Image 1 (cartoon, rainbow, N blue to C red):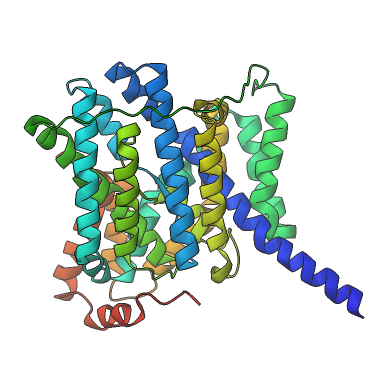
Image 2 (cartoon, rainbow, N blue to C red; image 1 turned 180 degrees about the vertical axis):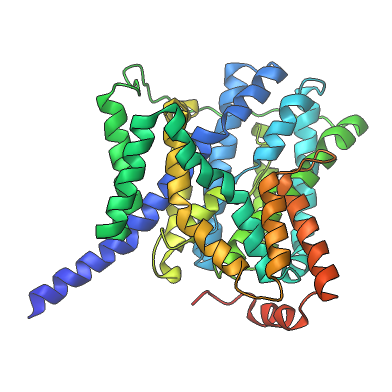
Length: 413
């Protein structure tokens, strides 16, 4: 009787690692394959040498990996960190008129501001005031385009996207736990068979970080440091924390801000512009697809951190591999991996009749991806949603605020 029990235990332990590990890998692939091109564009605009560009890749990859591992290990929650994507988009324009040394100085100032904000505790107080329905509506709105993208690939690459969608549905029917793992493996095999991913010229070269002495100017402070801080705070930290809250994780924002801020501070002289808690790629690791048991999902944070470090060690080489995947594969994989999170978020947003209409407004406003004053859609979706809630209900829910205060810092059950 002991053999079956032993086999069952071994299988259970294997599942505790396989699914979070795959979730971490997919989040990294989506990050590099999706928006990492912005870093190369910004480097090109700034006229950076290949050595400085490689150092930039090294610094953000190592920094993101190490901070994610530290935060996930300490909190036992899937704290996924990433570079600031809206900030990278901003730098594509900003670095055209700002000397690189002054930009490095601005990165340092922005990082110090995040450390001070984390130590102050004010950001966590703001997060606690946001009703759960509004947070869920915001997340669903942010992720909606990724869900649509999973099926939009049918127009561009019907065979690849169609095979992935069909495989996902079939695997969900017969072995739901391995659906995301299955479509990842199937997609890679199909691309290799079609010879659409050329690995023949691949060389693993160790990255060499290059230190740049920072320079400080009032112009860079106003034109780079301040926008970098505000864009990252509103476009990354706010939705990133709400992703964690939506999936039941209650880790305080204070240590996340402080540790990622310190990491950004240390890596800035090597080119890192800013890294922070992730939002979209985090949702891949915080939901049920990563593990049915929330207490086991922190392994996905460790796995993602390790993969980021591997990319950092080998510089642009592995990043180039992820970017070589067809866009249809990246968008379909990301959308299918996020379907469960999108569905769960919509269900949570519509659950409470008192906040249902405000949550729906938040969802639609976030999905519209409004851009005003250089600030992205996540922030404006939240502002419009909270404003609607206050008008419709007269105040924020006091009871929920008390509950969040009481359970802050507790591990998710």
